[in-house]
Length: 98
Image (tube, rainbow, N blue to C red; front, top):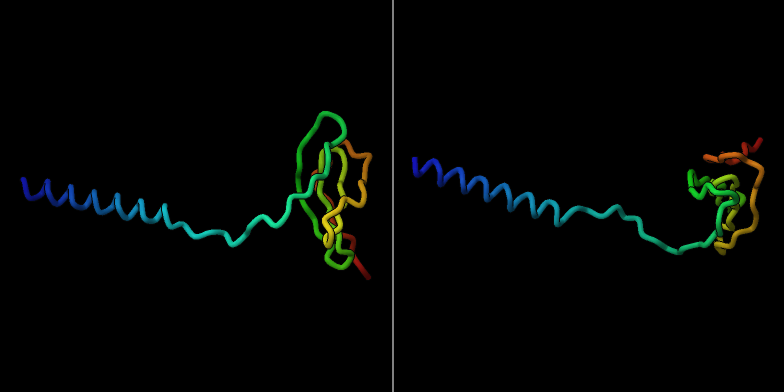
């Protein structure tokens, strides 16, 4: 019985060490923050962000932001406009080209 208890303890310790190593060496996502772009407060009392849409040909990033969509220049990260008049905006799609 003593041998069985020792084996169980050894297995338990081994699993614990393997678990700690697995958690400590989790692979990174490959993503990293390049720049923070302040876009100001959303109008009204609903401050939230939702979907981000990129239009690569126009070099614009559209960020659903409360009751509006902020338009950001993808090259210099400046806010170039706002599309307003929404009650709650959850995203937008880039226009189709013909």
